[in-house]
Amino acid sequence: MTLGSVAVDGDPVGILWALATAASFALYATLIKGLLAEHSTISVMAVTSAVGVMFFSPLLFFYDIHWVVRDFDIVLPLSLYLGVITSICPLFLFSQGLKLVHVSTAATLNLVEPLTATLLSVFILHEQLAPQSWFGMALLIAGVLWLSLPSLLLRRGSYV
Image (cartoon, rainbow, N blue to C red):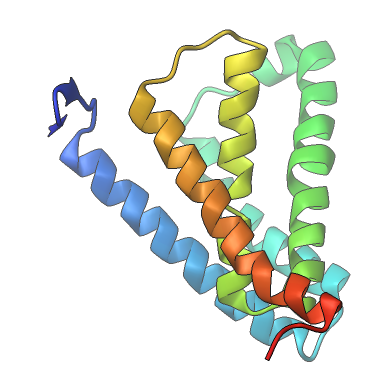
């Protein structure tokens, strides 16, 4: 694929997988919002995470996982970090946010996460981005600000 005079490294199958991922996230957010209307955040997150683990567990029989025991001094803290900091905390916060805003707003605001990761890769890892990437990030920021505009105007009392 090309974008103007710049080649975009995108496999059509990969793009389809990305679209499927986006659709599944939209479904996830919608279903979670419905569950949160009747159940506590902690119970919804615990049950949905446990079901996810249940579906992934059979894969342990098909892959070599002896390295977990061999590298346990690395695996344990990494697993705790991934479990608590990158999974439990964000899911809990996202669920709390779903109680306060529409699913479409929460899903759009969730787009700030890849933007943050991209900026960290630029400033910490010194990765180079194409101008189109910077333009895309600017559009993303503009979209988030656009979403925030009605609530900002309501707070000022100038929203009709």
